[in-house]
Amino acid sequence: MKQTLLQEKYPIFVTEIGKSETTYQTVEALVAYYQAKIAENPKVHFIGVFDHYAHTRKIEGPIVEGMSAAVDVIFCFGFAIPTPQMLAVRPRSIGIAEMGDKFVISFMEAPMQPANQAMEAWTLGLRNA
Image 1 (spheres, helix red, strand yellow):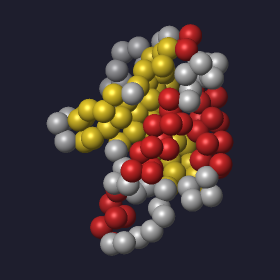
Image 2 (tube, one colour; image 1 turned 135 degrees about the vertical axis):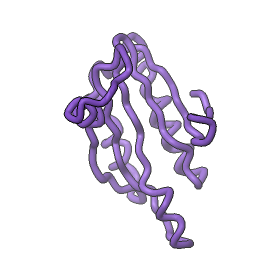
Image 3 (cartoon, rainbow, N blue to C red; image 1 turned 180 degrees about the vertical axis):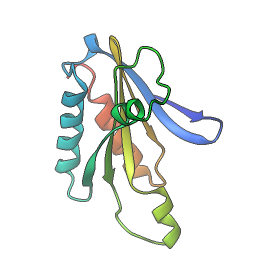
Image 4 (cartoon, rainbow, N blue to C red; image 1 turned 30 degrees about the horizontal axis):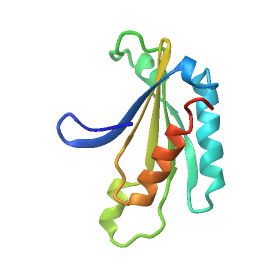
């Protein structure tokens, strides 16, 4: 898993998983996997799935060549609300893009380490699963 800055300001984690490296072969299967992981933790709440690809096609926006699907699994790790400003960095989402023979999984760094650790573990758990 690689940690980087997107557009020089958004701290993200990203990994590419070849379809040969996992038993999950569709975006729908990956969504179900993440939903199950979210459901295992009573402090995490599943919100929904946003089909970013369908939305972008509908509005005739540009889509990177080779992408055939793109969704965001949306959920919240909100253990507490220490300040009103915390709402700006919630909820969380994990992006799943299908790019031919691989998936690109990404998420923005969370302001609390347990959330980052969980999202990273969930994502790395896809390999050879």
